[in-house]
Length: 360
Image 1 (cartoon, rainbow, N blue to C red):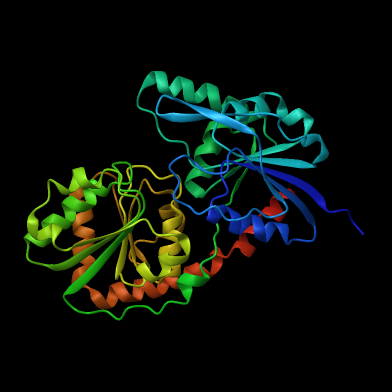
Image 2 (image 1 turned 180 degrees about the horizontal axis):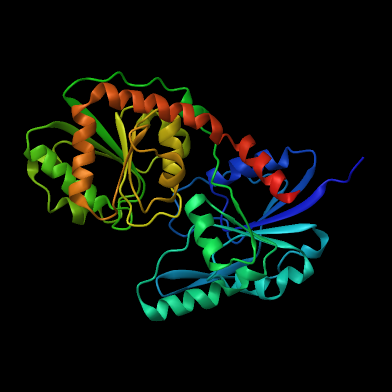
């Protein structure tokens, strides 16, 4: 009988969505996985501290703020020599990441697994990013989170093997919720995430305000951390504010009931490496509007099949997409059905199977 392949994953925090995949990997008989986290939780994380599994542990360490980022340093690091392969799913700016990469994981073959890098307009920031990511070229392989990430890494590091494995998470709670029947002439749009500029919430509110000004029967449901929301709301009309329901942050297990209250999902990010909320919107059977800066949109949202995509930062196009869905309720509902069909392929067991293929 062949020995199980010993694989170490190094990730940042035990997020609920990553842990769904890690659990599926731990159940594979051909793998012996161990998950190492840089920290138990981010300082501002609202996620509950669920008990870690036997195959998970947090590496001792800390972090310091620099250039609007958190730089992690951890010690002692796990002995990667006892593993057949290491997978680094940690940011390039972490000192821990740089140490492991530049020491080539102490001789253990390693894979970098990450989202698409953010484009840097500042020349100095571009140089820093290039320096920090240079060791990616020494990896046995680079696994991009989505096709956009894979293409970007393939362009930057042409001499390395490349794969595309997006994020997978448990969607059973969303799939169990019934789809809302369409009501002609009215629509509730949902946004789920942190209420900040990077997520494009200011653009969404402007587009929504314009629809309300046209006397269209629309409502907006916002779920997530407040962040910059009070500032954004100041610029809205009273009429628009009256049609917004802010539900605050909700734990993962309660999200399906909020998604079930919506007719369509909107993610207008200026940058989003992936966007697990798109997976969840598929599971909820919602048609999706997202910007072309959302990584998940390249893989999970097809124009006029299960949603619409628009140029990032373009509030006029966002408004047009929202109005198009409002004016075509039957088509929009069919797009939601198409979303739910796509969700079947996003089960964590499917993701685990893909990882086994990479390891082989």
